[in-house]
Length: 64
Image: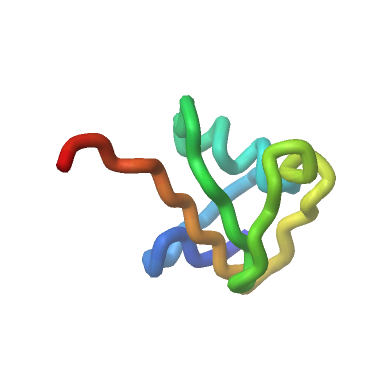
C-alpha cells in the first residue's frame, strides 16, 4: 500500500505502525504520529495503517 513517511511517498506491506517501524529499521527512542495525531509506544501495534496515511517519525537529537 502507498503511504507517506516523513513527507516522502513509500510503499509498504506493513499493516500497523509497529510493523512499519520494523520494516524501516527504526530503533531506539522515537516519536510517531499518524495523520498528525501522536501515537504512543504502547498503541503502535494496534494502530492500523490505511492507503494514503501520513506517518511522521522523529528521533531526538543530542548535543547543544
